[in-house]
Image 1: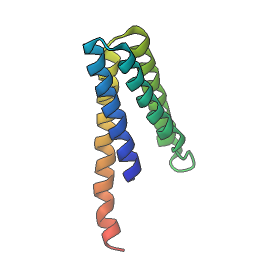
Image 2: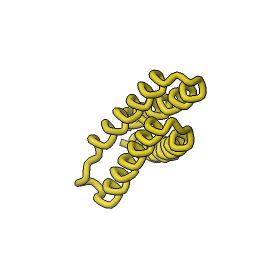
Image 3: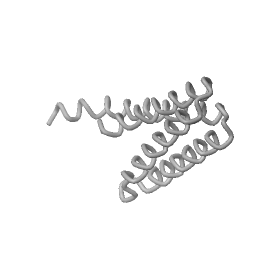
Image 4: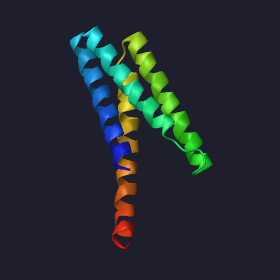
Length: 111
């Protein structure tokens, strides 16, 4: 669970850095940060186990795919809106994941 949280943080940071680079007009840095975010999302997608919660797995994979497409759009069109959308989605996912961790902690303490 901790690794997923770290990956969400890394992806969110890369997207924010890409937004900052876009505002600064730094094309190379923007592209590099978007690529980092895409690689993190790819790593997250490959870690999804479809045998555990098929419906949730399918939706999560579709969301990762959507975010990767938005990142590609942001890179190709040099627009902030897709980056902002991905940033918000990552924030929501990270918040939800953190909540899962909090709910799981009492269970672990009881063992």
